[in-house]
Image (cartoon, rainbow, N blue to C red; front, side, top):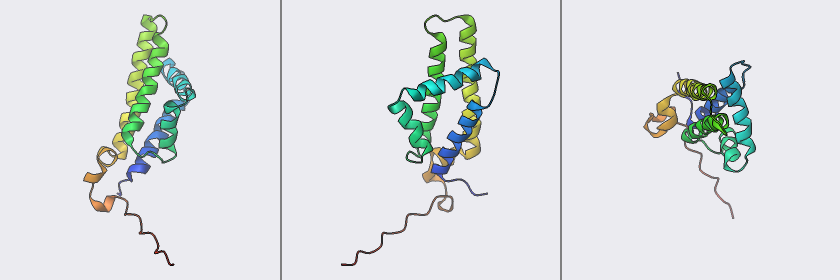
Amino acid sequence: MTVPQPLASTINTLAGALYKVFCASADPARQEMREACFEYLSLGGIFSMGPVSILSGLNPRPLSLVLHFFAVAIYGVGRLLLPFPSPKRLWIGARLISGASGIIFPIIKDEGIRQMFFPVTVPAYHRAPPPPPPPPIIV
């Protein structure tokens, strides 16, 4: 089995996580995660540029993906707890964080923790070949 390249792993991880977040579910925590995701991205700036750059392949760093994914979850918890927290909202917030962990960590494990976070430690035959040299300039 060939281990996926770091860029492909990051994009696959994000795509898999988004698929699980946006699957139809009656779970209030999953619904809150969907709404938080839309609001987080609508904030613009670094909130939308980060995930978009990951999905487009401009940012192959998986740590950025994990940070943004949990930022969305924490944003969702904040939406639940403001302006007044209640035991029900606190419970949904805890389930939201738990659900986010249950989505992202298995996907990262399947993609390969070592390949995603420590690609230089993977043997050379699993890494992408270096880019070809530029063609000579003929004057």
